Amino acid sequence: MLGMQKAFMEVDNNKLQPAEMDGLKVVSFGFFAEQAHQAAIYRGPIISGILKQFLVDTNWSNLDYLIVDLPPGTGDIPLTLAQTIPITGILVVTTPQDVASNVATKAIGMFNKLNVPIIGVIENMSYFICPKCSDKHYIFGEGGAKRISEQFSIPFLGEIPLNSGIMEGSDKGKPIILSHPTSPSAEAIRVSAKNVAAQCSILAAKLKEEMQGTAAQ
Amino acid sequence: MLGMQKAFMEVDNNKLQPAEMDGLKVVSFGFFAEQAHQAAIYRGPIISGILKQFLVDTNWSNLDYLIVDLPPGTGDIPLTLAQTIPITGILVVTTPQDVASNVATKAIGMFNKLNVPIIGVIENMSYFICPKCSDKHYIFGEGGAKRISEQFSIPFLGEIPLNSGIMEGSDKGKPIILSHPTSPSAEAIRVSAKNVAAQCSILAAKLKEEMQGTAAQ
Image 1 (spheres, rainbow over the protein chains, first blue to last red):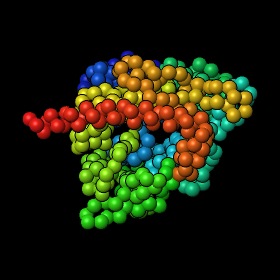
Image 2 (image 1 turned 45 degrees about the vertical axis):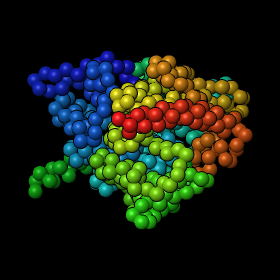
Image 3 (image 1 turned 90 degrees about the horizontal axis):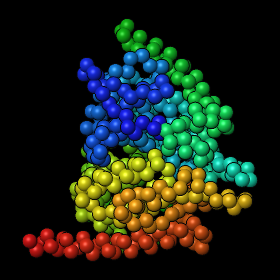
Image 4 (image 1 turned 180 degrees about the vertical axis):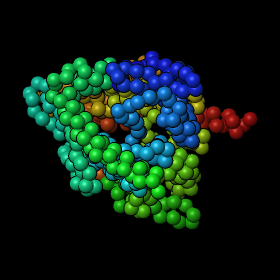
């Protein structure tokens, strides 16, 4: 989605060097697979090992945010993540329909069990506005993320429309927020991002307090 | 998607009894999680064990098809599957955009490596027809599945439109092919299913020959 298919992972002083674009430092399991020109076939324990390397053995230097994009649902990777580093919070992203929000619900249950805070929920593919007649269509149904927000008392942080511009931007590696910064889709993403950042500040302050408390004991 | 949220898995003579609906016998990891009213947090090796139980320790009796719905991409479950039972073939389902078809491509690479035949590729969410003005929109781009079909020389078996009727049917547990059997969406699914069945017959005959060949050696 960032157009980094050809990025390489260099190693310097025994640390992985992340690829960089527009101020984002990126490591991805996909880079290895690209380098080897083959599909990555690994079982969970090996993937967990690689995830730990990405977290611990990478030359991140100072970051504002460290964002980990997880596969849907529950599994080895979120478990390993929660057991390896302190997590500010989990951002839940879902589409509106029940079969998707049910998967999100299970993931929230898992992180609750692991005592990882939830930042909030964002709804993706919320609605489609017909470019010809401007009619608004809730193709995937309505209100899935709002129901999750109420059910778990977690903040509802935004909705992203279904829009071919967003898809094209992702395929070309040019996010719509850079290519069309004043479009309604870019604005929806910007509003959501601001909401997420505000919640993160609150949770990060809490986490810092807890860690200082633990250190003092 | 089959409205079986409340289905239970009974055990009889040490065999799991599948739940049943409209002639479909179903086992699902979700049933256990529902019974326990909790999120399923298990690592890959445990999930692989459960998958083996579903395949081997379930009272399937005679089936026309045994269909396993896999998570996207590569991982423990498809690996375990390929190493546990002989597989007639893999049906690849993708949406049109590159970021999705890239994941499908990796899965095809994995199954090629494991010598599992590919039945073909179906494109989901191919296009959206505006219910108000009838304009056709390729929201996720065009031709992702056809590109995969050409790249790997595997059959292109159909395209399913993006349609709120399909979504609603899935959420309510009433597939559109039963609730609106003459709708264009149901017709698209029926055509795809027939193409899949035809390919399966060919591959199943091949598999039978191979297994008899192996048994004779």
